[in-house]
Length: 265
Length: 258
Image 1 (cartoon, rainbow over the protein chains, first blue to last red):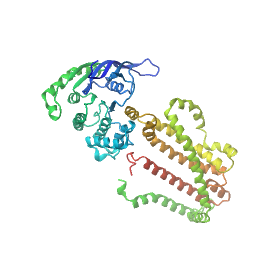
Image 2: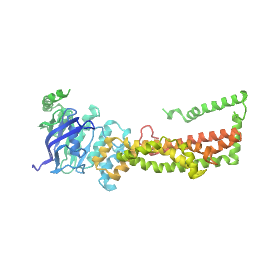
Image 3: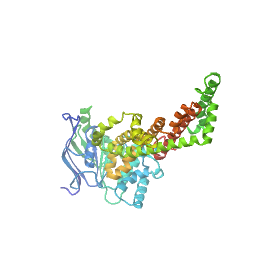
Image 4: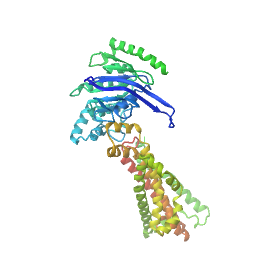
């Protein structure tokens, strides 16, 4: 096995039973093979319903595969673990916890002391620009701020692998552009080796802007259609978006994915 | 919106209809030619209120009823909250208990009064038992629903963070179910108050329910109405107290923020 391989998916298959009595089954994933290198930003791009979120849930240990397996550092994923942090669609903040408490919760679960927690929470709230809102509840924040809080919560866990499930799907387009740059800035900034990121999205621009490599999935049942390199310089910013190479890559991926989208619509 | 209306305006709006009702009551009692025993005038009720208050009789009945409600409601909460959490968390257990609960629930609290009198005698024991039974159901059912209603994506998020067991219970299950739990407690307290009065009509020698039945037998209807008004005002105050507690315990709820 390649030393630099962080996550390895081998023939991951997932079947759901639609009705209780059995019989009707939906095949969400049909033999996904994928390797994610340590420290890379990998985007999984696919039409809606292709099972990309399911794949991420299996990697997070929140769901089990029907066949095949996902290995992280060579270890079969059994359940959630402190080596992984997940960021969800629609922020999923605890409404009864303040911004501060939401970020702090995971650190509490991991048994960190009070002072240590305070330092980490303050640091990450500063990074996402929410220091002044530490004592607000999620319902008092805008959609973009909630998603920033969710990012701070994910990064604060300091896990080696970050699993992100369309974290910006529900914020407006302008805010999304800003948050994309922020996510890259925070990812770049950390001390120590870069974290491995698996980022699920249905937006081609988002995938190309963020990732080192883009894995394109087929329509359901999901398989990996191909993995494409994104040889764009970092740091990436507004200029990246107007780069002709960026545009070409987006168009190329669109051609690849178009058939898949047409298959389902 | 609410704040800009001003306190005087809000109190005025709150009081205007009750004052009109008293005025109408007064006029009807003066010009209607009814038997004052069957339809006492507001001034007669006011002086009855003064006399009962001054003699201390009213306070004894009020404190007796309130104490019974608090004991019965407290015991109902102590039983229904943990049971509701358990049944909400473990579906097989709920399915197991469902048969028994489904048959007990439709029995009205007052149908228990005859047995309660035999078991606990006339007085505190039987009335508190009826209150306990009446308040138990809304607390139990709302607690079960509260646990079931917790957003599944929040449970998923907690589990991805690694929270389980006691941590999950304290940080997610309890606050997540709190809105419906508190609703259940508020409804339970309201029902407790209604059932104590009904229970005291037959199963006690003291309390507001007993008081109105007692003065009815003496045909002193002013005192009956004083008792009824006391029941209304106290019920209202209890509900306000519960709402204040809800606000206090759930500062995160939009629209409830002080």
